[in-house]
Image 1 (cartoon, rainbow, N blue to C red):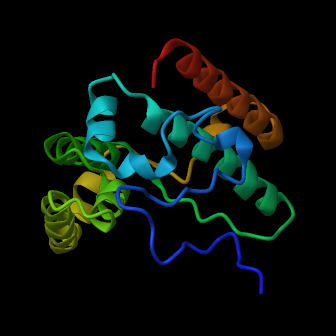
Image 2 (tube, rainbow, N blue to C red):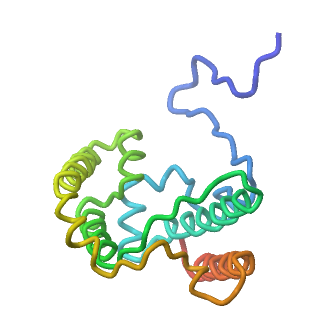
Length: 194
């Protein structure tokens, strides 16, 4: 009977760890494009490195995610496989929400997605971030009636997409924007150490 290569032996020599598989997408493996494994994005030192503009791993992964997601979703929308549910643009709410999000990120070193990843990796300090996330969600729900009457009316532009602001077809915009983001990624990759 042949053992699967995915199985880990029950006992390993003391002080050794099982080998981890490389990424199935070699372009995104840690040795090619991103020098830090994507799972490390939930680690405090990587996130703080991004806030201090010393470790660009988070920005690189976000750029890849934006390009892949944008092309994927808009391609599926073009072929009528998904519907876009665009939220209205509200400048006042976006600015205030961004400031609150940024303050929470700066104080804890985690954003909502990475706090869950960090907690899953056993980082107990992420409990404070998770508590803040829950408290902030509760506070937002409690104040939603007031914010709908006030803050959400400041700078309300309706359901606007970035591609609507330029006189070019959406497909041309998507390709052009993806190329701009890819160029930013290449610059970050060439001129930063992480």
